[in-house]
Amino acid sequence: MQRPQPHEGGPLPQAGQEQDLARAPDVTEDEVRAFVAALDAASHRKDADEFQTYFAPDTTVEITLHTPLGPHTQRLTPAQVVRQLRESAGLAIEVIESQRLRLQIRLSTDGHQATVTGETLDTGRVMGMTMRLRTHETFQVGRAHNRLAITAMQVVSHLEGFAGFGQR
Image (tube, one colour):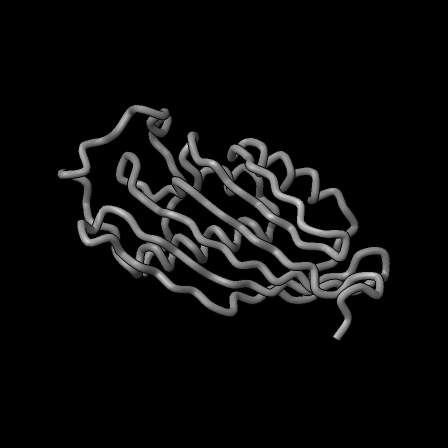
């Protein structure tokens, strides 16, 4: 299985510009699995430049973080997500373990897109305190200029243990 390459070869279509889906090659489950693995790797390396290549420019990313103080939801563009990734790279967060617990891929009946649902568990240390972040994600993957790209994404994360909160 070949690792998918980040988007190359010109800009992705802007909102309102659509490629001819009748001629687009089918999206395969193996291709989507490789895409998710490459996306995860870029995220864990905090490689903002590569990470951004996995999103169509008009994608909306909805992120909800549940903390002991309550939920906080943001609706972001890919550029805003990348800015946050760059900012987090400067934080003193030591990643202890990051694992994908579940991954489900549902291909559309026409074969032109896939819905990906998954769950990850990240354990890290911040300022000497250990935290766990359990994340549930759902996103749409489609083809743009013969490359896969995320076209919509929803992320819900739960902080499960940090500074004495949420300990089990």
